[in-house]
Image (cartoon, rainbow, N blue to C red; front, side, top):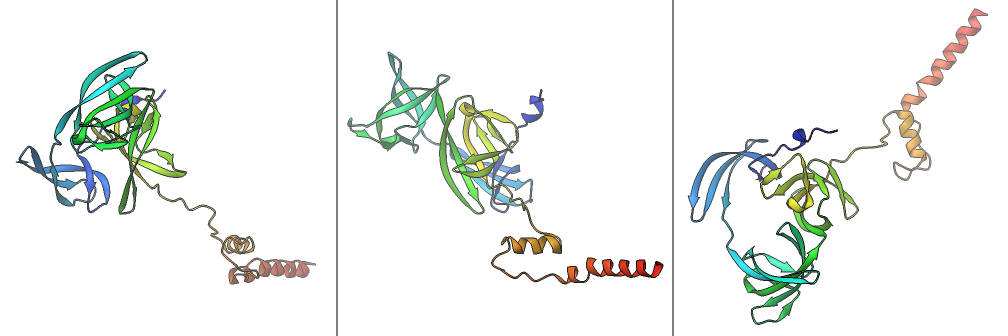
Length: 253
């Protein structure tokens, strides 16, 4: 049985380092209040780069939601960031349950497939058994956003390899309501976002000796070469040793 205490190591102050191009732990050198938020002077724990991070809390809105669970329906107001865009089919957590949005209305009662929260008059949602997990996929200096739908209790482990769109990715960090972790397991319903990076490429079946390289030529693994040249190392190697061995045997006779 695995020791869960070892896996549940949370790393605080994890953010994007402009020098590393990766999500790393940071030390806070200075904090200054700015309006309703704060400006932080940070130092990367990995490369030592010092940079500034500005954090501002989003404005919250109360959006009326009709929540349907079987034959029961109730109206509740749910807090949402004013700049968040809701889509038909989005799944969210509320009252320890998952809900899927099946209708979005403007303030004038018109139906939309997607809408920014500040323009929503009301939304409808039904109970769901799956949750939506948002992803940030990073390739080199470029990042894209995506999302997946999984069972509420599915576990994701930071540092492990997962497959998405037929490609393998490394889970660099997991963002939860309590912060970001770069190690440990987190159930899907507690995840705000998963940060994925391309895993390091493992070099496999690379010919290293002259004999392996010649065989690779024959099999076409090194490109088009119908008449592979015998490496000099093979020409002057084993065959000469065999001839010398035969001459010695003749002398003994």
